[in-house]
Length: 449
Ligand code: MEV
Image 1 (cartoon, rainbow, N blue to C red):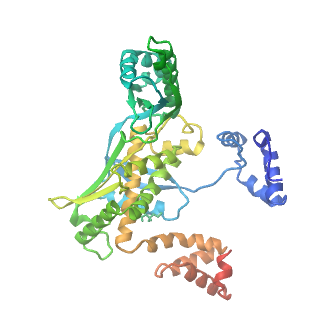
Image 2 (cartoon, helix red, strand yellow; image 1 turned 120 degrees about the vertical axis):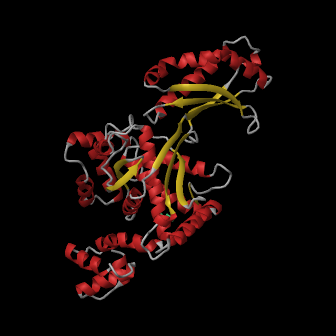
Image 3 (cartoon, rainbow, N blue to C red; image 1 turned 90 degrees about the horizontal axis):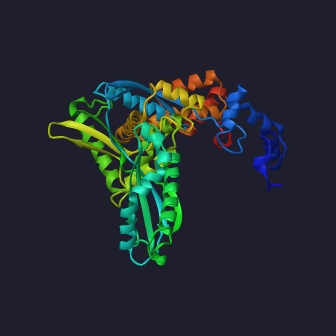
């Protein structure tokens, strides 16, 4: 009963019916639960249904906002879609801290995106292919014109195509590498369409050429953009005199600054720490990417590849104290984002997030997203080197524990107050809850709730 043919052809109702019968013994409460997440407005629900195949319901993730982000002098309230309790709080706290110290200074360094036609050519001599390509290069650009015209009108397009010999990696392996400017679009469809046209041009022009027969054959393996975009890069920095690093945790600013830099240094030399360090940065980056309808998997993959560009996986952020006693903390991260196309103009909540940010273009959004990553990292490292991460983290997690215990609003309020001065742990919260209800504290039973 758990195998099915033609599932995608079934109606939504029939899909749910099959699922519930096959995996939940036909339990009607499962259907009820799935349906309870459908949107009231049928047209909006239909929109969601059609984003992907086999939609059965919507999956809720909270959308929070982190106000007080001052970036290049402009104030933003940043939307963040994320399930992890402490992330928005940490971003908001850091944003407020840096707003009073000049804010985030951001620069987009470049916006070039890259794609490849991966192919094999086993002709007489690579020189023959290079010479032929150089002579016929204009044809490649010419034949993509019908695809690039609209993008060119918007200031983008295909900027260059070159032939690369990759025989040192695999015998016969070559690439056509094309560079693109996609302006406010993430540009995946545009780039892939251009690459597929380039591969057709390669095949047809080569086979119709006057080269020797053995040089006319090419095997196209695939045409695809690269999510590694080290030339589509943004830098965001915060800085202030060391004396102004007053973090109110009974720590001298200079001690804090030095310990902070030491923590960053550890993330630069120790991949175990670098991974967690960068994960914290991605808490910020991904949540804004998701809220603005961007492909956070592409952004993640790219960021981690970039973090390994020297052959060792390292921190995406860095910090120094300059000779004039200025503390500087910055992130440099590649990021291919779009503010048009995809679901950006379709998904009602994504549209709201773009409006909340003042409808930024792709470059402005790159700066906002990277600033959120930097803020997140500042918050995490600040906690790590002062109070420890669990204090803030568990404070935010307290509500999750209380919700698991099905505490009432009144009970939550009483226990929240109680823990303002106590360390939050799962056991301590269960004990407090049981004592409030006057029941025996059975940690194990309640844990499974
Ligand atoms: C948790 O989601 C992220 C942190 O672990 C990041 C870090 O350790 O820097 C707190």
